[in-house]
View 1: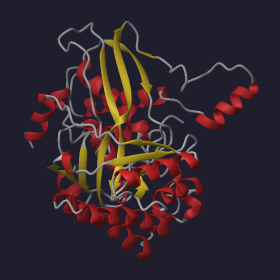
View 2 (view 1 turned 45 degrees about the vertical axis):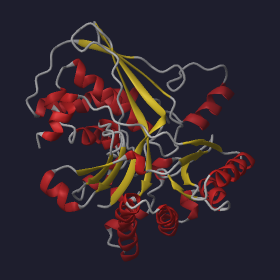
View 3 (view 1 turned 90 degrees about the vertical axis):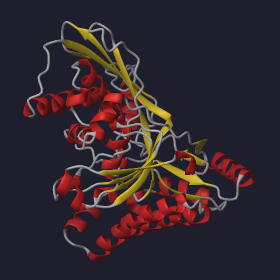
Length: 403
Protein backbone atom coordinates (compact mmCIF):
# COMPACT_ATOMS: atom_id res chain seq x y z
CA UNK A 1 0.00 0.00 0.00
CA UNK A 2 1.40 3.39 -0.95
CA UNK A 3 2.54 5.51 2.03
CA UNK A 4 -0.30 4.55 4.35
CA UNK A 5 -1.07 7.42 6.72
CA UNK A 6 -0.47 7.04 10.45
CA UNK A 7 -2.93 7.24 13.27
CA UNK A 8 -1.62 10.63 14.11
CA UNK A 9 -1.21 11.62 10.78
CA UNK A 10 -1.44 15.45 11.00
CA UNK A 11 -2.01 17.13 7.60
CA UNK A 12 0.87 19.28 6.88
CA UNK A 13 1.09 19.80 3.12
CA UNK A 14 3.93 21.73 1.59
CA UNK A 15 2.97 22.88 -1.87
CA UNK A 16 5.11 24.07 -4.74
CA UNK A 17 3.35 25.65 -7.67
CA UNK A 18 4.55 25.06 -11.19
CA UNK A 19 1.95 26.49 -13.51
CA UNK A 20 0.38 29.62 -14.94
CA UNK A 21 -2.79 30.06 -12.93
CA UNK A 22 -4.24 32.28 -15.63
CA UNK A 23 -3.83 29.79 -18.43
CA UNK A 24 -6.75 27.34 -18.51
CA UNK A 25 -4.84 24.91 -20.73
CA UNK A 26 -1.70 24.86 -18.58
CA UNK A 27 -0.84 21.93 -16.38
CA UNK A 28 -0.94 22.33 -12.61
CA UNK A 29 1.44 20.59 -10.23
CA UNK A 30 1.66 20.62 -6.44
CA UNK A 31 3.91 18.91 -3.94
CA UNK A 32 2.95 17.76 -0.45
CA UNK A 33 5.74 16.83 1.93
CA UNK A 34 6.01 14.03 4.44
CA UNK A 35 5.19 14.73 8.08
CA UNK A 36 7.04 13.98 11.31
CA UNK A 37 5.18 13.83 14.61
CA UNK A 38 7.70 15.24 17.06
CA UNK A 39 5.75 15.19 20.32
CA UNK A 40 2.27 14.30 21.52
CA UNK A 41 1.30 11.66 18.98
CA UNK A 42 -0.89 9.63 18.97
CA UNK A 43 -2.99 11.87 21.22
CA UNK A 44 -4.24 13.83 18.19
CA UNK A 45 -6.73 11.01 17.69
CA UNK A 46 -7.88 11.35 21.31
CA UNK A 47 -8.54 15.05 21.88
CA UNK A 48 -4.88 15.68 22.54
CA UNK A 49 -2.04 17.94 21.38
CA UNK A 50 0.91 17.42 19.08
CA UNK A 51 3.98 19.11 17.68
CA UNK A 52 4.91 18.17 14.14
CA UNK A 53 6.67 19.49 11.07
CA UNK A 54 6.83 19.01 7.32
CA UNK A 55 9.75 16.83 6.25
CA UNK A 56 11.52 18.20 3.18
CA UNK A 57 13.38 14.92 2.62
CA UNK A 58 10.34 13.24 1.06
CA UNK A 59 7.27 14.35 -0.85
CA UNK A 60 4.41 13.38 -3.13
CA UNK A 61 3.59 15.35 -6.26
CA UNK A 62 0.39 15.45 -8.31
CA UNK A 63 0.03 16.84 -11.81
CA UNK A 64 -3.28 17.94 -13.32
CA UNK A 65 -3.45 18.37 -17.08
CA UNK A 66 -6.67 19.64 -18.72
CA UNK A 67 -8.07 16.94 -21.02
CA UNK A 68 -11.18 15.95 -22.96
CA UNK A 69 -12.09 13.13 -20.56
CA UNK A 70 -11.57 12.66 -16.83
CA UNK A 71 -8.56 10.33 -16.57
CA UNK A 72 -6.50 8.87 -13.71
CA UNK A 73 -3.07 7.65 -14.77
CA UNK A 74 -1.70 4.67 -12.82
CA UNK A 75 1.79 4.99 -11.41
CA UNK A 76 4.27 2.67 -13.19
CA UNK A 77 5.45 1.23 -9.86
CA UNK A 78 2.76 1.73 -7.23
CA UNK A 79 -0.19 0.81 -9.47
CA UNK A 80 1.51 -2.06 -11.27
CA UNK A 81 -0.84 -4.43 -13.14
CA UNK A 82 1.67 -6.29 -15.33
CA UNK A 83 4.18 -8.75 -13.87
CA UNK A 84 7.02 -10.94 -15.07
CA UNK A 85 5.72 -14.02 -13.28
CA UNK A 86 3.47 -15.27 -10.50
CA UNK A 87 6.47 -15.10 -8.18
CA UNK A 88 6.97 -11.44 -9.13
CA UNK A 89 3.30 -10.72 -8.39
CA UNK A 90 3.36 -12.37 -4.96
CA UNK A 91 6.62 -10.68 -3.93
CA UNK A 92 5.33 -7.29 -5.04
CA UNK A 93 2.06 -7.73 -3.12
CA UNK A 94 4.01 -8.80 -0.04
CA UNK A 95 6.13 -5.63 -0.15
CA UNK A 96 3.68 -3.06 -1.54
CA UNK A 97 0.20 -4.44 -0.80
CA UNK A 98 -2.74 -4.41 -3.19
CA UNK A 99 -3.36 -0.70 -3.47
CA UNK A 100 -1.58 2.18 -5.14
CA UNK A 101 -2.37 5.87 -5.31
CA UNK A 102 -5.02 6.04 -8.05
CA UNK A 103 -7.74 5.18 -5.51
CA UNK A 104 -6.62 8.19 -3.44
CA UNK A 105 -6.89 10.53 -6.42
CA UNK A 106 -10.39 9.26 -7.14
CA UNK A 107 -11.56 9.61 -3.55
CA UNK A 108 -10.38 13.22 -3.14
CA UNK A 109 -12.15 14.12 -6.38
CA UNK A 110 -15.34 12.64 -4.96
CA UNK A 111 -14.95 14.36 -1.59
CA UNK A 112 -14.05 17.69 -3.22
CA UNK A 113 -17.06 17.52 -5.57
CA UNK A 114 -19.48 16.71 -2.74
CA UNK A 115 -18.10 19.49 -0.55
CA UNK A 116 -18.49 22.06 -3.31
CA UNK A 117 -22.01 20.87 -4.08
CA UNK A 118 -23.06 21.02 -0.43
CA UNK A 119 -21.62 24.52 -0.05
CA UNK A 120 -23.00 25.96 -3.32
CA UNK A 121 -19.55 26.34 -4.88
CA UNK A 122 -19.93 26.28 -8.66
CA UNK A 123 -17.46 24.19 -10.67
CA UNK A 124 -16.91 24.59 -14.40
CA UNK A 125 -17.41 21.64 -16.76
CA UNK A 126 -13.77 21.11 -17.78
CA UNK A 127 -12.12 17.71 -17.44
CA UNK A 128 -8.57 16.75 -16.56
CA UNK A 129 -6.01 13.99 -16.28
CA UNK A 130 -4.44 13.34 -12.87
CA UNK A 131 -1.12 11.61 -12.28
CA UNK A 132 1.12 11.32 -9.24
CA UNK A 133 4.57 10.41 -8.03
CA UNK A 134 6.00 9.92 -4.56
CA UNK A 135 9.30 9.11 -2.88
CA UNK A 136 7.85 8.89 0.65
CA UNK A 137 8.83 5.52 2.17
CA UNK A 138 5.74 3.35 2.39
CA UNK A 139 4.20 2.60 5.78
CA UNK A 140 6.90 4.55 7.57
CA UNK A 141 4.59 6.75 9.63
CA UNK A 142 5.33 9.76 7.42
CA UNK A 143 1.81 10.42 6.08
CA UNK A 144 2.48 9.24 2.55
CA UNK A 145 -1.16 8.71 1.58
CA UNK A 146 -2.18 12.06 3.00
CA UNK A 147 0.50 13.77 0.94
CA UNK A 148 -0.88 12.37 -2.31
CA UNK A 149 -4.42 13.38 -1.39
CA UNK A 150 -3.46 16.88 -0.25
CA UNK A 151 -1.38 17.59 -3.36
CA UNK A 152 -4.29 16.47 -5.52
CA UNK A 153 -6.70 18.67 -3.57
CA UNK A 154 -4.49 21.68 -4.18
CA UNK A 155 -4.51 20.94 -7.91
CA UNK A 156 -8.31 20.81 -7.88
CA UNK A 157 -8.56 24.11 -6.03
CA UNK A 158 -6.49 25.82 -8.71
CA UNK A 159 -8.05 24.07 -11.71
CA UNK A 160 -11.53 25.14 -10.65
CA UNK A 161 -10.27 28.48 -9.29
CA UNK A 162 -12.00 28.02 -5.93
CA UNK A 163 -8.99 28.22 -3.58
CA UNK A 164 -10.46 31.38 -2.02
CA UNK A 165 -13.74 29.57 -1.32
CA UNK A 166 -12.32 26.51 0.47
CA UNK A 167 -10.69 27.71 3.67
CA UNK A 168 -7.37 26.31 4.80
CA UNK A 169 -8.92 25.09 8.06
CA UNK A 170 -11.47 23.03 6.12
CA UNK A 171 -8.97 21.23 3.91
CA UNK A 172 -7.64 18.77 6.55
CA UNK A 173 -11.16 17.38 6.90
CA UNK A 174 -11.43 16.93 3.13
CA UNK A 175 -8.16 15.00 3.11
CA UNK A 176 -9.37 13.02 6.11
CA UNK A 177 -12.64 12.12 4.41
CA UNK A 178 -10.86 11.02 1.25
CA UNK A 179 -8.63 8.66 3.24
CA UNK A 180 -11.59 7.48 5.26
CA UNK A 181 -13.07 6.14 2.01
CA UNK A 182 -10.34 3.50 2.13
CA UNK A 183 -10.27 2.84 5.87
CA UNK A 184 -6.94 4.61 6.34
CA UNK A 185 -6.35 5.61 9.94
CA UNK A 186 -4.91 9.13 10.14
CA UNK A 187 -4.51 11.93 12.65
CA UNK A 188 -5.52 15.56 12.12
CA UNK A 189 -1.97 16.74 12.63
CA UNK A 190 -1.13 15.25 9.21
CA UNK A 191 -3.73 17.08 7.19
CA UNK A 192 -2.87 20.51 8.47
CA UNK A 193 0.76 20.32 7.44
CA UNK A 194 -0.11 19.24 3.94
CA UNK A 195 -2.55 22.08 3.37
CA UNK A 196 -0.53 24.89 4.85
CA UNK A 197 3.22 25.44 4.58
CA UNK A 198 4.50 28.39 6.58
CA UNK A 199 7.83 29.76 7.75
CA UNK A 200 6.73 29.11 11.29
CA UNK A 201 6.26 26.43 13.86
CA UNK A 202 2.56 26.25 14.58
CA UNK A 203 0.89 25.54 17.85
CA UNK A 204 -2.39 23.94 16.85
CA UNK A 205 -5.44 23.28 18.92
CA UNK A 206 -8.02 20.83 17.62
CA UNK A 207 -11.27 19.50 18.88
CA UNK A 208 -13.21 16.44 17.74
CA UNK A 209 -16.66 15.03 18.25
CA UNK A 210 -17.18 11.37 19.17
CA UNK A 211 -17.16 10.22 15.54
CA UNK A 212 -14.51 12.51 14.10
CA UNK A 213 -11.78 11.32 16.45
CA UNK A 214 -11.80 7.88 14.85
CA UNK A 215 -10.15 9.18 11.70
CA UNK A 216 -8.17 12.36 12.15
CA UNK A 217 -6.08 14.07 9.49
CA UNK A 218 -2.80 15.56 10.52
CA UNK A 219 -2.64 19.30 10.48
CA UNK A 220 0.95 19.17 9.36
CA UNK A 221 -0.03 17.72 6.02
CA UNK A 222 -2.43 20.53 5.25
CA UNK A 223 -0.38 23.37 6.73
CA UNK A 224 3.16 22.14 6.04
CA UNK A 225 5.80 23.46 8.43
CA UNK A 226 6.66 23.07 12.13
CA UNK A 227 3.46 22.92 14.17
CA UNK A 228 2.34 22.58 17.74
CA UNK A 229 -1.27 21.42 17.81
CA UNK A 230 -3.93 21.27 20.50
CA UNK A 231 -6.78 18.89 19.66
CA UNK A 232 -9.00 19.68 22.65
CA UNK A 233 -12.68 18.84 22.28
CA UNK A 234 -13.92 22.32 23.08
CA UNK A 235 -12.27 23.86 20.00
CA UNK A 236 -13.79 21.47 17.47
CA UNK A 237 -17.19 21.79 19.11
CA UNK A 238 -17.05 25.60 19.04
CA UNK A 239 -15.02 26.26 15.87
CA UNK A 240 -15.06 23.08 13.84
CA UNK A 241 -11.29 23.38 13.34
CA UNK A 242 -8.06 23.93 15.22
CA UNK A 243 -6.20 26.88 16.70
CA UNK A 244 -2.71 27.51 15.33
CA UNK A 245 0.04 29.42 17.09
CA UNK A 246 3.18 30.12 15.00
CA UNK A 247 6.68 29.41 16.28
CA UNK A 248 10.09 29.94 14.73
CA UNK A 249 11.56 26.91 12.94
CA UNK A 250 15.03 27.89 14.19
CA UNK A 251 13.99 26.70 17.65
CA UNK A 252 14.34 23.10 16.47
CA UNK A 253 17.63 21.35 17.27
CA UNK A 254 19.28 19.13 14.62
CA UNK A 255 17.17 16.01 14.19
CA UNK A 256 17.68 12.71 12.38
CA UNK A 257 15.30 10.37 10.60
CA UNK A 258 15.75 6.60 11.00
CA UNK A 259 13.70 4.14 9.00
CA UNK A 260 13.69 0.58 7.72
CA UNK A 261 13.34 -0.51 4.13
CA UNK A 262 10.61 -2.99 5.10
CA UNK A 263 8.53 -1.13 7.73
CA UNK A 264 5.41 -2.21 9.57
CA UNK A 265 1.87 -1.28 8.62
CA UNK A 266 1.31 2.06 10.37
CA UNK A 267 -2.43 1.88 9.71
CA UNK A 268 -2.93 -0.87 12.33
CA UNK A 269 -1.10 0.67 15.26
CA UNK A 270 -4.14 1.81 17.27
CA UNK A 271 -5.27 -1.77 17.68
CA UNK A 272 -7.43 -2.22 20.80
CA UNK A 273 -6.31 1.08 22.33
CA UNK A 274 -8.94 3.09 20.50
CA UNK A 275 -11.75 0.82 21.61
CA UNK A 276 -10.45 0.82 25.18
CA UNK A 277 -10.42 4.64 25.07
CA UNK A 278 -14.02 4.66 23.83
CA UNK A 279 -14.96 2.23 26.58
CA UNK A 280 -13.59 4.62 29.21
CA UNK A 281 -10.50 2.62 30.16
CA UNK A 282 -8.96 4.73 32.94
CA UNK A 283 -5.37 3.74 32.15
CA UNK A 284 -5.66 4.61 28.45
CA UNK A 285 -7.48 7.88 29.07
CA UNK A 286 -4.96 8.99 31.69
CA UNK A 287 -2.00 7.92 29.56
CA UNK A 288 -3.29 9.73 26.46
CA UNK A 289 -3.79 12.88 28.48
CA UNK A 290 -0.19 12.56 29.66
CA UNK A 291 1.01 12.13 26.08
CA UNK A 292 -0.94 15.23 25.04
CA UNK A 293 0.65 17.23 27.84
CA UNK A 294 4.10 16.39 26.47
CA UNK A 295 3.36 18.64 23.47
CA UNK A 296 2.64 21.57 25.77
CA UNK A 297 5.78 20.91 27.78
CA UNK A 298 7.75 20.47 24.59
CA UNK A 299 6.62 23.79 23.21
CA UNK A 300 7.79 25.49 26.40
CA UNK A 301 11.11 23.62 26.30
CA UNK A 302 11.72 24.72 22.71
CA UNK A 303 10.84 28.32 23.42
CA UNK A 304 13.27 28.28 26.34
CA UNK A 305 15.83 26.28 24.32
CA UNK A 306 15.94 23.68 27.07
CA UNK A 307 17.01 20.83 24.80
CA UNK A 308 17.86 18.49 27.65
CA UNK A 309 14.24 18.69 28.76
CA UNK A 310 13.11 18.32 25.17
CA UNK A 311 15.10 15.09 24.80
CA UNK A 312 13.57 13.61 27.94
CA UNK A 313 10.07 14.46 26.64
CA UNK A 314 10.75 12.65 23.37
CA UNK A 315 11.80 9.51 25.25
CA UNK A 316 8.85 9.71 27.62
CA UNK A 317 6.50 10.02 24.63
CA UNK A 318 7.62 6.65 23.30
CA UNK A 319 7.62 5.04 26.74
CA UNK A 320 3.96 5.97 27.18
CA UNK A 321 3.09 4.61 23.75
CA UNK A 322 4.86 1.35 24.54
CA UNK A 323 2.91 0.94 27.79
CA UNK A 324 -0.43 1.55 26.09
CA UNK A 325 0.04 -0.47 22.91
CA UNK A 326 2.50 -3.14 23.94
CA UNK A 327 5.50 -4.35 21.98
CA UNK A 328 3.51 -6.97 20.06
CA UNK A 329 1.43 -4.23 18.48
CA UNK A 330 4.34 -1.83 17.95
CA UNK A 331 6.45 -4.54 16.32
CA UNK A 332 9.95 -5.72 17.15
CA UNK A 333 11.57 -3.91 14.21
CA UNK A 334 9.98 -0.60 15.15
CA UNK A 335 11.00 -0.91 18.78
CA UNK A 336 14.56 -1.80 17.74
CA UNK A 337 14.83 1.44 15.74
CA UNK A 338 14.08 3.38 18.91
CA UNK A 339 16.42 1.27 21.01
CA UNK A 340 19.33 1.63 18.56
CA UNK A 341 19.20 5.38 19.14
CA UNK A 342 18.79 5.07 22.88
CA UNK A 343 21.78 2.78 23.23
CA UNK A 344 24.05 5.63 22.12
CA UNK A 345 22.26 8.11 24.41
CA UNK A 346 20.08 9.76 21.74
CA UNK A 347 16.44 10.63 22.34
CA UNK A 348 14.04 8.87 19.96
CA UNK A 349 10.40 8.17 19.22
CA UNK A 350 8.12 7.17 16.36
CA UNK A 351 7.44 9.80 13.69
CA UNK A 352 3.93 8.40 13.47
CA UNK A 353 2.66 4.97 14.33
CA UNK A 354 5.67 2.98 13.27
CA UNK A 355 8.09 2.43 10.42
CA UNK A 356 10.30 5.43 11.12
CA UNK A 357 11.90 7.16 14.10
CA UNK A 358 12.93 10.75 14.77
CA UNK A 359 16.08 11.08 16.88
CA UNK A 360 17.89 13.90 18.66
CA UNK A 361 21.53 13.75 19.77
CA UNK A 362 21.88 16.23 22.67
CA UNK A 363 25.63 15.56 22.95
CA UNK A 364 26.36 16.81 19.44
CA UNK A 365 28.44 15.55 16.46
CA UNK A 366 30.31 12.79 18.28
CA UNK A 367 27.00 11.27 19.36
CA UNK A 368 25.63 11.65 15.83
CA UNK A 369 28.57 9.60 14.53
CA UNK A 370 27.82 6.87 17.08
CA UNK A 371 24.19 6.89 15.97
CA UNK A 372 25.11 6.65 12.30
CA UNK A 373 27.42 3.72 12.96
CA UNK A 374 24.80 1.94 15.08
CA UNK A 375 22.12 2.38 12.42
CA UNK A 376 24.42 1.11 9.70
CA UNK A 377 25.26 -1.96 11.77
CA UNK A 378 21.56 -2.61 12.45
CA UNK A 379 20.64 -2.21 8.79
CA UNK A 380 18.61 0.99 9.23
CA UNK A 381 18.71 4.07 7.04
CA UNK A 382 19.55 7.37 8.75
CA UNK A 383 19.61 10.90 7.35
CA UNK A 384 19.49 14.46 8.70
CA UNK A 385 16.01 15.93 8.92
CA UNK A 386 15.21 18.80 6.56
CA UNK A 387 12.34 20.89 7.90
CA UNK A 388 10.32 22.27 5.01
CA UNK A 389 9.14 25.88 5.42
CA UNK A 390 5.74 27.06 4.28
CA UNK A 391 4.81 28.48 0.93
CA UNK A 392 1.21 29.49 1.51
CA UNK A 393 -0.21 31.62 -1.28
CA UNK A 394 -1.69 35.05 -0.65
CA UNK A 395 -5.12 33.56 -1.24
CA UNK A 396 -4.55 30.88 1.41
CA UNK A 397 -3.37 33.46 3.91
CA UNK A 398 -6.48 35.53 3.30
CA UNK A 399 -8.73 32.54 4.10
CA UNK A 400 -6.88 32.11 7.40
CA UNK A 401 -6.83 35.77 8.37
CA UNK A 402 -10.51 36.21 7.50
CA UNK A 403 -11.57 34.02 10.46
